[in-house]
Image (cartoon, rainbow, N blue to C red; front, side, top):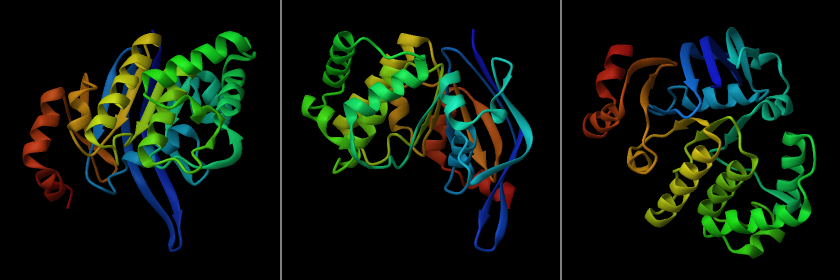
Length: 252
């Protein structure tokens, strides 16, 4: 069983007015096959955790540790983290004009696995995964996210997850901007990718609607850079009914 262990993590970010501390001591352990949902109001540090784990240079870890199967994740470069089995689906996927989806995916798969996938089976794998996500096969020859709708970008993120088979996936508000049909298709893709590789999943969201399709084992409430409360799936239903007011009043 693989584990991703976050211990007393503090993270700051540079702003025009100086350095601002965002995370103030986060402790979290995710194991293979587990789904952890992180919920909380805007500005509570949810996305900061995602980008700090991925190694975004804007986010400075000032103290604490993150270990993936005992190895120091924070000592790794961004590409080393990906090869170690960490995957990030971004809230706002970037466009890469001039690089086709098929070439991007095969290059990423080669980098993660250390060898290029056989072309014949790889083409079949891409077509099958795209069909599962109801993506037109023509998207494989389009530039990465260039001219894609919001929903198409999110499907492409999950396409990457299915093909790269990470040990741990961090999904930063993958449900944002999706209509009901797209949400169901994307959620089914997340479940397939998770089950195929017994992956651990860290799902960051504002709303419970995706949690109706991707059922969490644990729910963590982020407020002011800390985990304010933890529980099972029922905690998400409570948040849907009551909101975050009681947590924000305490933090204030």
